[in-house]
Image 1 (cartoon, rainbow, N blue to C red):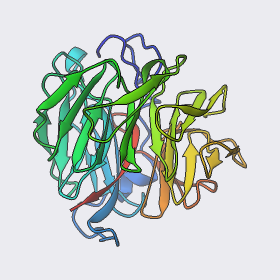
Image 2: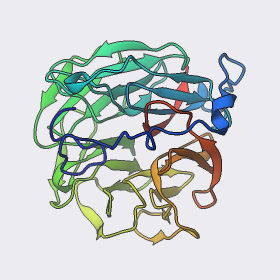
Image 3: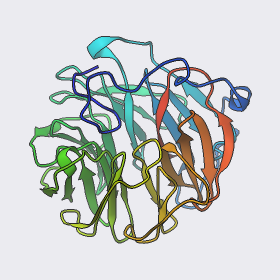
Length: 330
């Protein structure tokens, strides 16, 4: 793994998450629920087929078309080592395909998996940049960020030719909302862009920010114990240190509500309510009427309101999964 890389936004020592047997997940209720085929496909009102994709180590991706009840796809790449190790770090979708991005972390590096059905995935290469840490889609383009200041742009998710390096948008997380890309990253930097090429931002200093959510009127970026809220994407409206973020930096927005990794909730990104019971989520996303999350024990949880959570069982044994995205397949 590339020296200095830390998936959860810390300074990093090149080690990454501990992939001990306990972290890789245990076969559980979901292991017997894998379903292959199209019988779970359900076209939602926004068009396309609603799904959640869980992804992480060795290019592993799990796809559910029924909000985590069963898993239609569980695939992984051939394991690699060193600078060739493959991690999937971010996911996004356009009207024509779903895109997952990640390492390897050699220079140049980075790769893309793209799919139109969740079962068949093709690979594309990102050149001229180190591996991306996240991706978002908006204004007709995919945009990636990484923590060495690279951004790459693609209109179709398969050809990545517009990569540039600048310290302004050094980022670990990116989302799209209110007609803008919002990114956050090292040294508390927050940035906005309409095209993914020209950015405006501010370095707030302090701990790295590594997960972001775009709301209807504000943006939120988080670290393991920090939460930054901004209205314009460049000025902090609120910067909280020492907040209870559970195990990991995670945040999502849906149905008018922000939810973070500690299951704290907020309508505006500024005023937060604690959960009724302790909660610790590694990753979460909103779509198809629910929040879906990976918890600290590699379990899958679902909530209709971000407050009441139902356990859907453990992730089947295999390479660890650290991220989840809501997507729509064409």
